[in-house]
Amino acid sequence: MTDTPRTGTPADAHRVLIVTPDTLGKKMGGPAIRAWEIAKRLAHVADVRLVSIKQASLSHDSFRVFTADADELRGHVAWSDVIIGQGEVFALNPWLVESDAIIVVDAYDPLHLEVLESGKDEGEESRRFLVDYCIDMLTMQLRRADYVICASEKQRDFWLGHLGALGRISPENYDADHSLRSFIDVVPFGVSDDEAVQTRHGIRDEIDGIGADDKVIIWGGGVYNWFDPLTLVKAVQVLSKRHADVKLYFLGMKYPNPDVHESQMAAATVRLSDELGLTDSHVFFNMDWVDYDDRINYLLDADVAVSTHSNHIETAFSFRTRILDYLWAGLPVVATDGDGFAPIIRDNVLGAVVPAEEVGALAEALEEILYERDSEAIRDNVRAFAREVTWDHALVPLFDFVQAPRHAADYPLSLNQSLDANRLRHIEALEAKILEMAQELGTTHNDRANALGEIDRIHHSTSWRATAPIRALGRVLRRN
Image 1 (cartoon, rainbow, N blue to C red):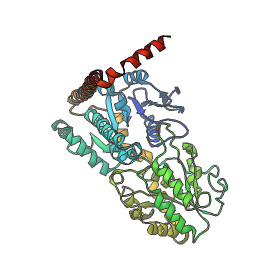
Image 2: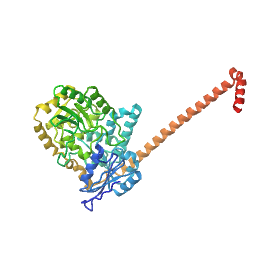
Image 3: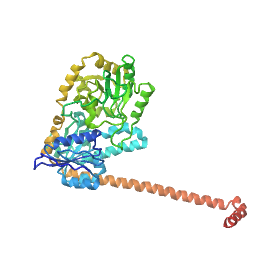
């Protein structure tokens, strides 16, 4: 456990507990990065504790960092005025909804849409379970939430529908604020406020096969089932026939949380690259994960960044956090149309937007930016836009809430409803288990009755009577 003393927080600041189910370490995925960056900035206005219920090995001068099991988490909750939780935190610790602390639900990731794709790795029965589990998990949080934050206006509309179905767009919450912004607002990922400075080369002349003057395309994050790296690999094959110096680098293939296994899409991407003869000549894979503080050394070695995906429901409500790192590094971006970033890229001339799964269009867009367009002008656009979407800008609604936290207007009704719903789920689960056991017991009784009937039939058969002397001889021989 890491326990670092905070410094510089006002003595009368509210006590804010941020809880993530992800690993906090040198290598971090999206949920951990978001929790870490929020903690860094809220520490200026609040007394912050950041807790991982998985593992934490980081420390910071401005706030305390802990690893906590369920019992230890209870102590942190008792200390807090405000709890900010994400993902599985509430599902794994359902007693949290009983706390009288003010609860902020971080719903930046619609997990039940994500697992429609990621769950394909688990088989149909497990996939169905995962979808249902995520729906229940999100419903538990939203029933109890005093304040909800999400990543985009489109997501906000999506969650308003869910909240409405749960009865949370109530007269109390509506009368408190007709816009409902005080109940649910947009707090996206932000671009780092730090200057993007390269301290070493991560790719050029560091990766065998990638030289100082090559044209480098970077895929800046994990390879998951909802992405489409296959079209990208095919586009690079097309480009490689015209440009020997084009190189594609995948920044990370192994997610830092050990509970997250390699996706089917990651394996398929490596397999396709091998089949096309591109691996280690035009396509390169970091089979591990880059340290969070070292990622800029890889990004600044690239000429263009990519984010490609298929056209499905996850895309429509996604918020591609890796694109924020692209903006931080001042990289032109080539992305598939259909997600929330596509109009931003198009309207601000930050790169190019292409149709989903069209190899030719993707190859053409990459070629144009790498070899034909004024990439420095695009970089200027990217850097200018990045300054408008830093973490400090993104977190303004959360800053305001934490400095004057409050329960939702329908509290404690929301608490009681959440507790009742939680108890109902336990009752339903218990009833389902009892029914399953009864069915198993009934099957056992039937099997026993059938077996006894079969034994009785055998005992009365002619063959049983005819072989009686042989069985008697066998018993005598076994005794001897």
